[in-house]
Picture 1 (cartoon, one colour):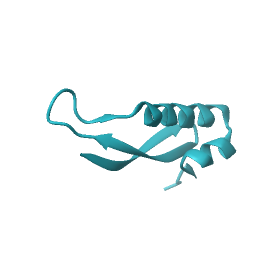
Picture 2 (tube, rainbow, N blue to C red):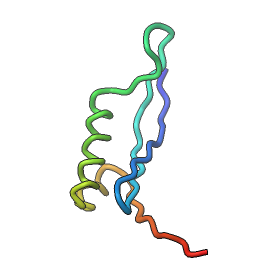
Picture 3 (spheres, rainbow, N blue to C red):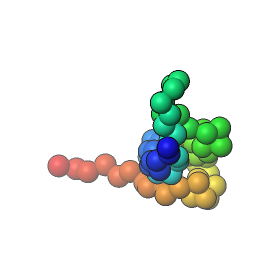
Length: 70
């Protein structure tokens, strides 16, 4: 069985929302993700670290964090 999940990655002033698939099995370590999804998360984090928002936006939704003065 698999289930779609949104993962949030925070780097600096940005957050990216990346969709991945989690796989559930009755045996072994569960849930787990595919190698492609793991690389997708790594690439998204690396793009944000470099400030490459164009590449990051191809991997998921990118949000800019703005401090709120109260």
